[in-house]
Length: 358
Image 1 (cartoon, rainbow, N blue to C red):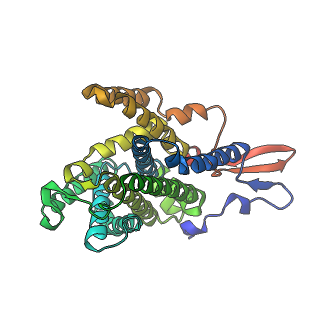
Image 2 (cartoon, one colour):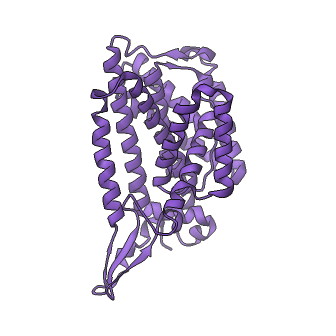
Image 3 (cartoon, rainbow, N blue to C red):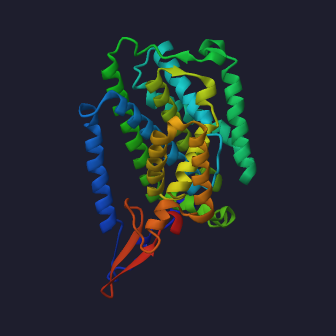
């Protein structure tokens, strides 16, 4: 029996002389190039905009990280979690402890906090994976609440009142915000690249097989539990990095805020609006949510009601999200994740469509 690492890629199945397989298409060339230019422009943004605008952009990058990680869990792994706030809170607390108590450089503490969350996610997965479907979703929520209750009982981290980050107290405010902005941008780019490479890999092919039919995937030689655990740990690390960035930008960690289920609600909204199970969808969903948040945040409850109405509309009438509407008639990929055969009778044929079309 073959394992998930033995899955044969399409380029290995094309007979010599019958054609060639490539992953890059015109749309992926244009999309990847545009995004690369966009990253360069964003990196220079602290020199061109006000500090208040940088705060808003940091929030955008954090939301992008969270949406990409939840989409990886639910869209590719089939694991609908509403407890990712556990890792957001752990990441925020880890950064403060690593920077203030252990003396680690505050920006090096961001990846270190992600590693801490990944380590914690391993034993947690053994408990969560005993549940499936809706039970898994509620179970992850319960686990996150247990984590919150444990944290607030520890006086060394401030108990129920939280604690402040003192490692940056002597740094100039403008410089601190700029460094935080670059750190958030770097983590967001790294998270997107991790998602792209994971989906492109054989593990990504195994993951989509597990999502579509775990039993069939298992009988085909895919290590179902190990594949799901890999994604669960990666998502935990990403959410932990986002939590550490929240602590870095606000300079304070409050348990009721960082462990709030509202974070999972926001993740679900962004992914559903953008397009579940696509790499492009969460990016669009984040932009839509961020614009609504910046525009309507001052309206209080009306803002949340409008978000709920928009979410219900997409669930009922636009189930594939905005990106699903864009790519419905023609398969468009902004990242090189699909396979395409060229040179077959002078035509170009699609051999394998990954993501939601597999």
